[in-house]
Every structure is written in structure tokens, then in C-alpha cells.
Image 1 (spheres, rainbow over the protein chains, first blue to last red):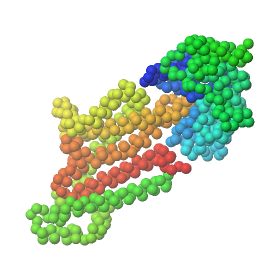
Image 2 (tube, rainbow over the protein chains, first blue to last red):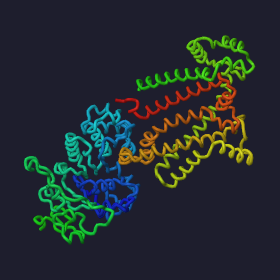
Image 3 (cartoon, helix red, strand yellow):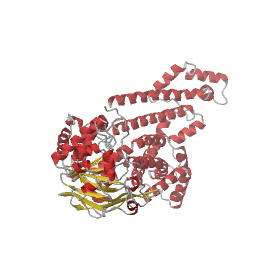
Image 4 (cartoon, rainbow over the protein chains, first blue to last red):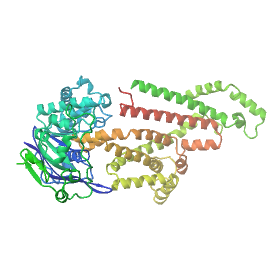
Length: 325
Length: 306
């Protein structure tokens, strides 16, 4: 079953300096039980894409798209209110910062159970039983007692476990995780990720994981979508993208990952020169053109068209040749 | 929670002692009370006799403790002007101010909170602008003028309500509305700004992500956090309203505490002034303590949950 079939999503946000075209034609597909990682640097539009999928984008955002099927419902052209039938009913999300994502004045038990009490009409007792089971599953000891505690009585890593449990309370089919480890210590990051990967496998979740950490991607992705300046510039299987990136931007990202033992000590890590283009002025050609080693006149003049790959697609006038048949 | 409660009550008790000492000291700051009681025609010997009769020649501490002892038994002494017990005078005036203040406060709160919430949902929207207009008007228009206009329009022209006095409950309508209108804006605006801040937080987004209906997100999640600053402000506002508005009570000819305090000051009727000040200070102590306890109930971090 296809959980998400999204074509040509555009999201623009009015600002004082003009209309910010933050998402400029994104295509995404996700099948049940699949893990798709959306990667890209800060400001490339990946969080905004996720929020739009959740119906929680900025109220002022102007959104349009082609086909937009989410959990079997057609969402194209529908307002934020339409998501009320999806959130907590098959669609769930884990947010970036667990320190601020829990209500400080309500008990953890109330925050875990209130969603399903409303959406499924569960009794408090039944909802608490489910919460206790999930808290134990995400690794919180003495779960029954801890339901009566408040968020500030939990550490950062524990709070992200709470957030994961909270997102899973409604037994979703489609889980969006927006940089779930960014706010955590490195040691905790690994624990949370392996927890997330385990849950995804056990529960057969469709997982859309948004991150800018390529180490994370390598560990748990089935497929990877690389986002740059509001567009998905390359998409393919995780194994291929890491070994043979087709887009120069993807290649630049991969080259910037230090590998212990192979990356020489004391030398600067390779970096992609230049800066992300502003998204207020329309971009005529390829958005990556100015930073690209292969940038030519053609790149600046015409937007690149899709090139099909055996495992996905790439959007480049001059993709890495060896994989294009 | 118990530790927090005890600590707050201990602080409140200390404030009570300090306030009582200050209102007792008032007697002596203003001048020699014996001379004041003797009056303009009294001789030095009269004053001396009064000083001895009232015990003003005893050490201050002894006098203070004696006074506190009487106050605790509800005895504030004799009014110099009315020549009757202060307690009786205050007891006659207190209900008027309590009704006026209590009802005005309730009305102001009942209007301010929903209006603040609705305004915060769409800042800059039509409702928000209208609410702001209402608030600015309430803050800018002096209540004596508004009171007089209300009397002219509703009392004199239309004859809907009595123009003055509190003999019937209808007499309270205009003063309550006018007083509530002066108290409402600050509470509305603090609710609005608190709500705007809270509605932008991550945990509200989490609540929405769970699929909760909007009213449950607003009442169950946002309001509880947004009204924390309102609670403290509301306690002070209620204090102000319960201390009796001299202006409103004068305009509507209501015999409340505010007017009593004002008139007694003019008459140098110090025992009455002393009693009113002490009572009102205690009202503030009770209200601020109550506000702290309400906030502790709302927010586990305040009550020291570890």
C-alpha cells in the first residue's frame, strides 16, 4: 500500500522581503513499511515539507501541489482542517526538540493518553495500559509510576523516548520524524536511532526520517531523497547513493563525511564552496549551478530535467555518467 | 507541595506582622494622637490626661501588643469622629465594597479571558483589533467621566437604573459595569499575549499532532500555561477592586470602604484609617498568597515537584 504519493508540492511563505519559495516542486513516494530519509542542509525546505505533510505548516504558507494522496485520502488543494481526520489516526510525527515539545504543566500520562481517548474513544484505563506497554517498549523503566510525573522529571533522551511513545500511541501506519536526534547528546543519538529503527521494523511503519546527519541515513534508510534549495535533486536506494552518488551535490555531501582511518589527519575536510541561493528571486536554471564544479552556461540558463536511474532519479544536466545507462 | 504551602504561609504571616506594625505606627507618624483627640480647643493638660487615659504614655511595644490583642478580637477601638466602635462602622461599609468589587472582578474576568483567547487566535485579525480598541478605550477613558455619562444616559434620560445609592440591586449595575470596564483591559491583554506566546510553542504543535480537537488544544494545553501571569495580575486587580474605588463610590454615592477611608483621612479619624489600611493590606496578603498557590497548582515546577 502506498502511504504517500506526492507530486509537485510548492510551498511559499510571505515575508517582508517578498514571497519565499521554500519548497519548489517536491515529489515524494512512500510505501508501507519503508524507511525514506530526506536529507539536505539547514534551510533546504525539508522540515517545511514534513510540516506540510502533517498539515501543521505555517498558517500563512501558500501551498499547491499536483497529486497529493496521503493514507488513501486526496489532500491536494485542501486546507489545514482536512488533516484533522489523519493526525492521530494513522499519521504521527516526532519533533526535533523533546525539551520543548512536551507540555510542562501536564503529566506525562495525560499527554500520552489524551490523543487516543479522543480519537479512539478508549477508556482512561485502556489508554494507560497501552501507554505503559509502549513506555516499556521504548525503554522507560517503572512505566506505571512514571505516568504521574511531569516532563521536567525526565532527561532529554528520555523525553525523546516519551515523544516516540506518544507518536506511536495511535498505532500509526505513517510516522514522520523531523530530525529526532538533533537536540540530543551524541551517545543518546545512537540509542534513539536504533530504537526508532527497531520500532519501524517491528511495527512495519512507513517512516519518513528527516535529517542532515548522513551517518543516520546510512544506518537506517531504505531509500534516500536529497533535497537542495526546495527541490529533490536526487533520489535512490541508500546503498547506491552512498557508493555512487549521481548528483554533484550528493557527491559533495558524501565527500564531506570523515571516515576514520581513511580521511587524512590534519587536513581540512572537503566542503562545498559558496552558499545556498536565496529563494525569494525565481531561479532560472539549476539551483546548485553556482556551487557546482561542473557548472556550465547550460546549467545557469535551463532547469535540469529528470534523469531516470535504475533505483530512482536525478535532476542534473551532467549527472555522474557511469550509472546512467 | 506541602513544603511550598508552608513556606508561602510563613511568608504571608511575616508580611501580616510587618503590615500591622506599620498601620499601628501610622498613629504616631501623623502627629501626637493625644493632641488630635483633645481637638483644637483642648489645653496641654487635657492632652496629658488623654495621653494617660488612652495609654499613649506606655512604651510603644506594649501599646502595639495591646493593640494587636484587641484587633485579633475584632476590636479596632473607637472612631474619633463618629464616637462609636470602628468595627461597627467598617462592618456597615464593607458589604457594599465587597459586592461592588467582587461582582466587577467576576464580570471583568469573564469578559477578559475569552476575549483574550479569541484575539490571540488571529493576532491582527478583526476580532483582535476590536478587542484592542475596547481595551484601549477602557484604559484611556477616566472612570469618573464614564460613570457620569452612564448616569446621564441610563439613569436620567432613560430612567432604567437608579442614579445613585445602593438601596436596591439595580443601583449596583452601573458602578459594576464601569468598574469592570476599567479592570478588564489589563487582564484581557495579558491573556492575549500569554496565549499568543503559548500557541506558538512546540508542545501546542505536539498536541495538534496527536489529533486533538482545537478546543481541547486551547483549553487543555494552552490556557493552563497562558494564564500563569494572569493569575498574579488578577489577584492584584481584585485587591484594587476590593479596596474600594474612591472615585466610583463617590460618583455613584455608594457608602463603601473607599469613601470611608477618604473621608476619615480628611477628618483625621485615625482609628478608622488604621483599621481600613490593615484590613485592605490583609486582603492583599491573602490574595497574593492565593495567587501563588493557584500558580503552584497549575504548574508543577513552581510547587517544586522533583
